[in-house]
Amino acid sequence: LKLDEAAADYWKFQEAIEFNKTLVISSVIEGFGNLPSGAWARSPDNALVIPVNAAQSKVSALLIVGLNPHRPLDEKYSSFFQLIADQLGSSLANVHAYEEARKRAEALVEIDRAKTAFFNNISHEFRTPLTLMLGPLEELLAGDTSAFSTKQRADLETTLRNANRLLKLVNTLLDFSRIEAKKAQAQYFPVDLANVTTDLAGSFRSAIEHAGMKLEVDCRPLTETAYVDRDMWEKIVLNLLSNAFKYTLKGSISVSLREENNKAVLKVKDTGIGIPAEELPHMFERFHRVKQSGGRSFEGTGIGLSLVRELVLLHEGTITVESEAGKGSTFTVS
Ligand code: ADP
Image (cartoon, rainbow, N blue to C red; front, side):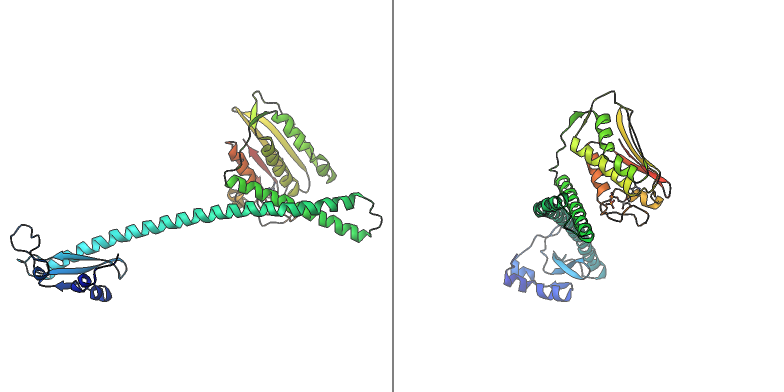
């Protein structure tokens, strides 16, 4: 707002703001004629210009009050006006604080949205070149490799394994950003959960037995049809199983499915390294990893379990973990 310069001069605004000081303006009748007077007939002739401080010693408004012509401006009278100004100041401070908080919240939402869009775009862009690298690599290793030395072959295999790992990561990020952008629509179809889960668990059998461990699968048919998104269920089961395999060096891994209180309950249990009690509350946080050794590999990003949790939530389900360090862990999805 641009103030009329003459008015600003008249009320000595600049002085009041600069020195943050209450000023008395006299002879206002001369400038404005008679002013509203209240209970008595005489118009005020003097006025106060009082700086209103919202934040500490920062003038955010000026309060102008006409003075009662029948009262001297003593300390009591001026402190009455100061009280009004202070009250206004603290109300203004509240308003500012509220506005700031709202702006911060809006900025955070905006950053989050931008980040999701960025993840989404970049994961897409990463996938194409990765796929184009993987194809020839796989072909190379599947064909006649007699021309390669052992070292060359091992290098190629490392490259292939890591390119695959990268692709998996990119896909997980893409899943994540879809969920965050609320673009992930679960497609609920009637699924024979016991059968599907048994099949999924079976795909780990050779790896688990190869490592000298046992795989126990016990999935009982449910009395009612379960409606789930098959792809998502697959991701849930495979993620939990691959963690169990990754963090278990001996013993067994068991997968079970039961009906409990009208819910399908999946348990993936291992006899692995377990999780320290203080880590349990953070297991489903994104990028959270437990700082401990003893797993089968150190590869990982801490994104698998939080994705599983999001997928479970899309099905209105719950996921919990019980574990004891050194003894093993059980993940339960209802
Ligand atoms: P990642 O395995 O890529 O690090 P996850 O989100 O799948 O990410 O797991 C997060 C962390 O939880 C892992 O780093 C690991 O320390 C711990 N964890 C997950 N599953 C198990 C398990 N079955 N036994 C022991 N620790 C586990």
